[in-house]
Structures are given as structure tokens and as C-alpha cells.
Image (cartoon, rainbow, N blue to C red; front, side, top):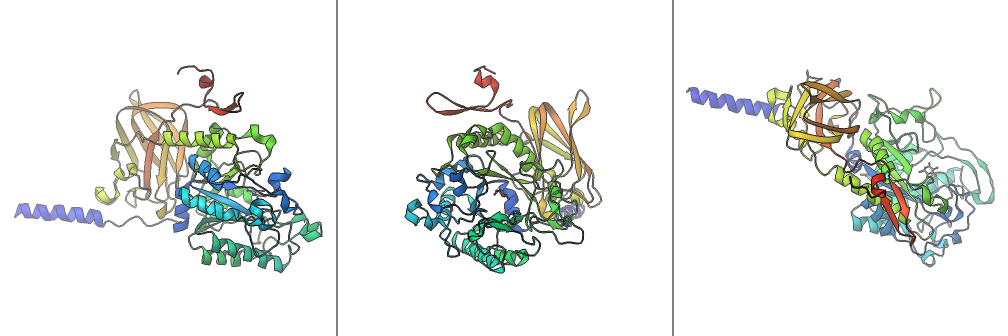
Amino acid sequence: MIKRLIIIFLLLKTVSGFCQPAPKPYGALPTKAQLNWHEMEMYCIIHFGVDTYTDKEWGFGDENPTILNPKKFNAAQIVGAAKAGGFKGVVIVAKHHDGLCLWPTKTTEHNISKTPWKNGKGDMLKEYQLACQKLGMQMGLYCSPWDRNSAFYGSKKYVDIYRAQLKELYSNYGKLFISWHDGANGGDGFYGGAREVRKIDRTTYYGWPETWAITRKMQPSVTIFGDVGPNVRWIGNEEGHAGETCWATYTPLAPDSGKVPANGYVKSWLGVEGTRNGKHWMPAECDVSLRPGWFYHKSQNVQVKTPYTLLDLYYKSVGRGADLDLGLSPNKDGLLAEEDVASLKKFGTILKETFAVNLAKNAKLTASNIRGKNSKAFGPQFLLDQNRYSYWATDDSVKMPELTLDLGSEKTFNIIRLRENIKLGQRIEAFAVDIWKEGNWQQIALATSIGANRLIRLPQNVSAQKVRLRITKSPVCIALSDFGLYKEPVHLSASIIRRDKNGMVSISTSISQILNINR
Ligand code: FUL
């Protein structure tokens, strides 16, 4: 009898553990398309067009399309270089402010069919689409709303043309992960020969809500990027970094109170941190170019960002819950220059090596609280699996739990990674990490927002057997999905691209390697 009662009791305990409801979601939540975007973490934006040939950044709109002839254009070379860098997709600039469409559009004569490339029979976007398919990369498109070529810019007719262009883009190039729109709106331009300044009302002219409705209808799994999202926001700078605190939630505000914010008409400096408890789930994209300009300029061949700089930007963007959007600039031949390819490759290798082994993988975990009286369904073991959405949760009343990790032996690391299960919102507001050293806990890190991803790059290597995580501020119980400790393969002190006398490019990752010093 007693035996039976014990069995029933144990059964009930297990069942009640598993039946413990999950924590209630907190605040604004991501959509499926946004989850995909978060998981990508990094993609590239590719600028190529008449500016590549005129050495400009913003074409006036009067360029003769015959200047564009990328004889060796190879989409797979460009997309492949991005892939080697660890990027998961590419956004192709289908039309920049100069108005030349890189696909054979029916909406304007000013398009790729008027160039000598492939005798006017080519479609660059199609080639990118095929390269992406072949290489398992996602594709997005940017069609500049500002068009300095169109005679109709500023009138209702242009908005119809712009929407027709988007419809072509949404119909002919497969499933897109992002539809990218910027806030450069009006100014001087060719405008079909008028050569004048045209101003538009940024809030009303484009009718963004109606345009987004087209996007959603034709590309249901896309995210829409802009200063005001609505799915992904601009970080507010083109330097590639998010704020030290960066919330995935955001309430865009117009510069003048009482007005409606729009792309190009927003307090963009608020994007860097976002809004704690903001109205929308609208995480940040950090855009920055691999070279100083977005387009290729030969004079900038020596200014390609080094793998070390890219790594720094990675920690300041992806490491703060944002995505990194790196600008790539194919040259006049239609290829990425060797310098760019080499830097991307090295960057990708360093990332792969850094995150290959989680040094906390076999740790013994002791949590101060586990939801539902130590329910297996919410245990800290989920922190160490590969699933971004399995998680350690605490009881509703426990908002400041602690977790101790015994690594089994002393391990050396310099990167700490945390992730929340963002399907339940962004919950945690602050945390600290300690190591056990000489009989005491010593704090080694202190940070705020986590969200989809938080990386802490310690100023130096740290060695310890016992590590402790303390959640120090959260309005609700936690739902943490990941805790990792990593070590960068080489402590990079510099990274230099060199060219030998035969013109071969090589990259040295540290001064000691350049000097051939054994470490
Ligand atoms: C901006 C544009 O004005 C730049 O030329 C570039 O395309 C950048 C990515 O977006 O809004």
C-alpha cells in the first residue's frame, strides 16, 4: 500500500512538473519572420551600379547606362565570399538613388537592358538569386524610394511606379528575407532632365503603410527594414555598432511632437538603444561597409576593414542582440576585389574557430531556482543545448536567480554568451558573471540587455573552474536559453592585409605572426 502511494506521489510530482505552465510572454513579441532574421545574425548588402564606374556614392540620375559593363560579373564569387565570412544572406541593391534598375523592369527605360552587359539581355538579380540558391544563402532586396532619374519623382505617378517596381521584385526573385528601405528622400537630381531640387513630405508621400501591405501580401515571410521598421529598425548610424544596452523593442518617434514618424523623419539616435518596453518588437540592424564607401572606389583598396575590425564590429552588433549588415562593393569587372575576399574569409574562420567549442558544455549546473519545483521541463540543462528556444525558467516570483557552473577543471575563456528565449519576449534587464578565485567570487562582467544574443568579450583571458551567473534585474521570471564560454583562437592584436611583389594578397592576424615569432 505504502509502495503504491509512493509511486502515485512520484508520478503526480513528475506530471505536475511537466504540466507546469510556461512563463507568460512579456511585452512585444517577434514574428516568425523576425525569428528567422535574428537567427541569421549577419548578412551583406551589395552596392553595384553606375556609381561603380563614375567613382561616386550617389549618382545624379543622368548617367548613361552604357558605362555599366561588368565583363567578369560572377554572382557566386560575391555571394560565396559573403558565405565564407559566415554571413547568411545578401541584400542586393536593385536600384540606388541614381535610378538605374539592375533588372529588366517594365516600369522605366532606365534599366539593365540599356547597358552593354550581356548585350542588354542580362538580369543581375536573377544571377544573384541563382547563386543564393546554389550556396544556401537567403536573399533580400533594396529598391531606393528616392529616384533622381525619374521625371515623375515627387508626383503620385512616381509612387505608383515605385510600387510597380516592388511588385516585380516580389514576384520574380523567389522568397526574400528582407525588403530594405532607407530614409534618403528627395533633393537635387536629374529628374528626366529637369535638373532641379524636389522635396517631398516624408510622412505622407510614399504612403508607406499601403506599400508595406503589398510587401506582406506578396512576401508573407519577409521582414521590412526602415528607420521606422516596421519589422527591423535602423540602428541610427552607419558605423556598425549598437548601444552597449540595446533593446529589441522600439517605439519610433517623430522629431516634432505630435507628428507621425516615417523613414527619414524619425529621432534616429534613439535607434541605437531602442526602447525598453517599446510598443513593437523591432530589433536593430547595424549597417556598415567593408570599405569606407558603399560603392567600389579603387582608391579605397587599401582601406578594406581588417578581420580584426570586423570582429570588433561583430561583438558590438551581433553581440548586442542586433544583426550586422556589411556592405560589399563589387568592382568594375563585377567581382569582389581580392582584399575584400581575403578579409571576409579570415573573419569567417576566426568566428568559426571561436564558437566551435562551448567550454561550459559538460558543466555541472546548480540553479538557485527552477520553475515548477525543479521541473525537468525548465531546467538549466537547456542552456547548453543548440536550441535557441529551449530554456531555463524560474517560478513567477523568482526574478533574480543564480546559476553556478562547475566546469570540471580549470578552463580559459574570454567570451561569454547569453541568449533569452525571445519567443517569450525580452525579459532580463541586467546580469553579472563571477568566477571563483582564491576562495572568493570575483565579478568579471556586468551587462544589461540580452535578447536574442549577448556576447561579452573580456579584456583578457580568464581561467576558472567555477563560474556564476547572477540575474540582477528582471521585471518577470526569466526564460534564458543559452550560456556559453568561448575562447578566441588567437588573441588578435592587429590584422594586416599585405600584398607581395607578385601581387598575392595575404593576411597576418597578429604582429607576432608578421614577424614570424612563435607564440
Ligand atoms: C543609405 C544610402 O543613402 C547610401 O547610399 C547606402 O545605400 C546606404 C546603405 O543607405 O540610405
